[in-house]
Length: 438
Image 1 (tube, rainbow, N blue to C red):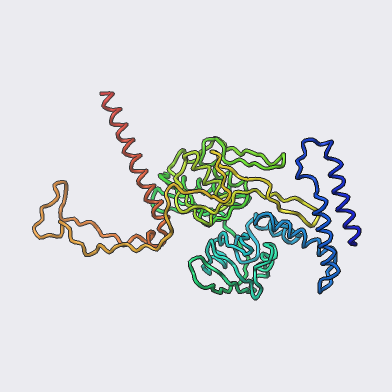
Image 2 (tube, rainbow, N blue to C red):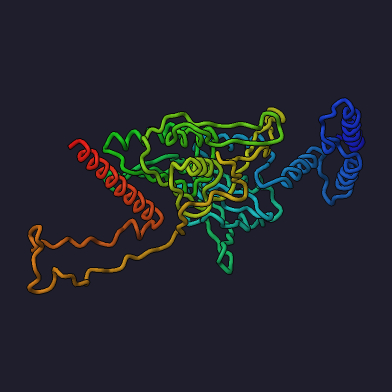
């Protein structure tokens, strides 16, 4: 496209906007294309076109301009080429080739939101909050998010060196990752102890709602469910509809999340079906700084409806809605069009979800009580009046869960306490009922 033709198009668009204004009283003043700014853009475009040290064709320059516009908006608005759009679709189905990182832009650098479970990035120990300074020999500063993602993607088996800056560390460090096919197991479940279940959601994919429902069915078919931990730590989010479906499994109706934006079709409210499949079973939701977007929607909804205790650390704070707007058959724009709000009207954006009980992830070593002397160890002690005093209670080894995952240990401990209190309340109610009948 020639410079003169481009200039005519830009000025013509501005003129059309000005002419249309009187007939559209509701149009805001900032909807009018600014003529002087368009002239400035055209002048800069021409200076680059004729004076830059290397020859760059018009279509490339315009693509750079589009990328620059989106980069200036927020970390999540991006220009999608055909390959990038395909990558986005692959991520929602749970299989793609790369390093296994959910990333965003911050101050010109790529910041890790969360590593994906079982990925090369997770196995290498990369953490939420780490900043990628270099990809190979290329500095990340100045790259668009999409350019950085394309560098991290590649054939399985190939490697790439990342230079990482970590909060609290004085010097960056390098780590070499080997790209692999990332198969994200969205949901998995297990028993922590008899009666106390655990469901981990690594990412919200298209089928996550159904997968969580199946996991609940599996657990409840094996034994009565006394309490459940829903682990959303380092879950970068994903499909909005799936987050609504997951929250609905634990709610008796009500709003899960609503959105507000400038476009007429951007205001939506998403409600839960009145089908709490667990019948009010005590629930603890674990979150941390790597819990973003759809994870925050679930945690916020369950917190506002007083359905769960939220435990861990403050979540990431990604409370914006991105809409993919096709530009052509092969290109699209992923544009931030609305903000998420919890049922009580709290904006998640840049604030995140504050846990009800804050517990930092820490390395905990259980105190060795094996040498402690009790009354039963004293020579000539009196036997217990209720039974055989010679029996000595078996000494349990240090709790492995506490040493491995102190946050999960605390969640399980809380569920046990809630269950004990519930049993006492039920027993007390039954006793009062029997006394009333007699």
